[in-house]
Length: 218
Figure 1 (cartoon, one colour):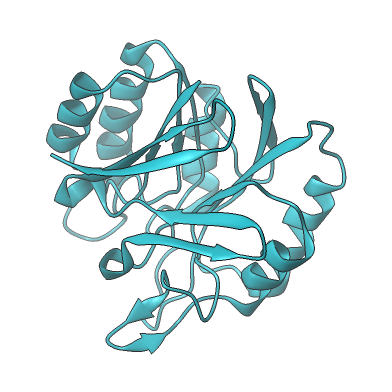
Figure 2 (figure 1 turned 135 degrees about the vertical axis):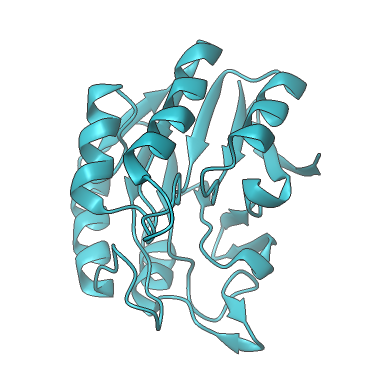
């Protein structure tokens, strides 16, 4: 199965539609920031447009909220569309995926969970996973990696890094730090920030055999 890996849409439905039209895949994983909750736009209307696009494509889609997605409102809509992965486990072929949304910023954005909350939730869910092949979708990137650098500083979560070091995930999809698009390895886990959809970035993961991730751009 091929997976479309995306993050940080920020309501850019035009680029999202172009990506979906361009690629063939069996399922979608999204690491958050589907829309933007701010004084300049209607969050719910923008979110609905994004989720409508996901529904029309006709393949399984699972997503977590980002820091710009109010947790309760976003998760409620994802649940209604059967797309929620936040604090949940989902099956993809011979994989299981677990997710947790939100991310820390200095700006007081709508959904900023503490690192301990992320760690406790993901590790509890991990212990319930039954598949040998495991994926994680976590908006906040791990600390001291190639994926958490903003303005030259590492701004990721130590707790997310500990999750990756302590558990046996095959792949972690993350996002949040737009300028830290790329891949990294921690222990034997591949971590991917495909880059923001709003800039035309995404990735395709081929899960047949060892996971092979191709970083792509419109």
